[in-house]
Length: 451
Image (cartoon, rainbow, N blue to C red; front, side):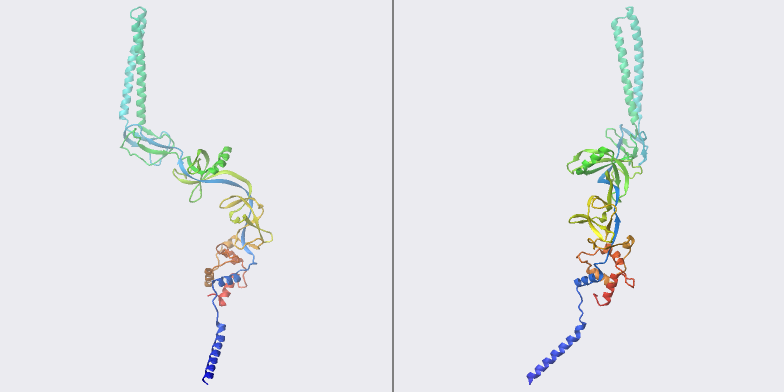
């Protein structure tokens, strides 16, 4: 009896547990994991057959200049360290710091008293010797007449002639001393030897300067025009020499920080040897520097124009993509599809690329929205202002879903930062006017999707 009772109790408990399980099973709703959320969101938010919104740009023909870029240092065309040639006290400084001066402008004056006294002595000595020479010449005339009457001997006449020659040489010596003394007096007035701009004063008035010590009073530099010495790799030397033999080459001085053009000049000199340490060659260009935008010692970027490609096909650099087989572009077709077209790039910079083969000048190429593109993919051309407009405000569900991740069918992250706005706007509004992806996410959140 006890055994039957136990069996009945066990059977009742089994029925009770089974009923409870059957009753609670409809309310068992598991929360999907991150991978399931990403797959569900990708399935709801994307239509693989929908047109891909892109931007396009037309290719065209143009003359494209070829520049070689280098870094250079600005140097004054002429630099003179003005110093005193004589010893003495600096009486005055006759220039303003930063003043533009011309050849002959007075910069400073040294006390000329002692040198003026030496000049006066030399002049007086010459006058004395000239008086003696005049008297000797008169005696020579007398001796010449007397020798004819045998009043004097021939020896006396010859002695007088030698005295006249000696005094004439002495007068010439005196003249040399005068010229030397005049030079010292002239050097007491220090003048600018070139046209340029003065720097900061090195010596103040009242100080004693010495010619032998080479005391620099001021440095004068020529800044109009001005020179820039820059370097290029030796691999580009042949190209530059070939272009330089045909005529002067244009050089552009560019601000290294702002990228703006400072001045335009001409290449003047190619150095006669390659620096074996760095493998570079020095070049020197001259710029008019009319607005004083270049300054001695300043670092600038130099763009040297070596050639110009005539009437070549040009596309925006953003349109050129790279793949295992080389460069290619997406060409927009008349039936609103794209075609992958292999191209050959001959020249490229930050804004434009020269296509030497593979593209016609009348074709249009895609410049954005590459993440979902493939050969034969249907596209819709969006306007630039649409792609630049801000995206709709994201709901908390959107932010959580974005944090999990957004991947397309290839496993690559979708191009949200560049093309999310245009994709949302062109994804097809419903009758409420909301974008399709936002509608799917909202309905998913309302139906008990990911929290």
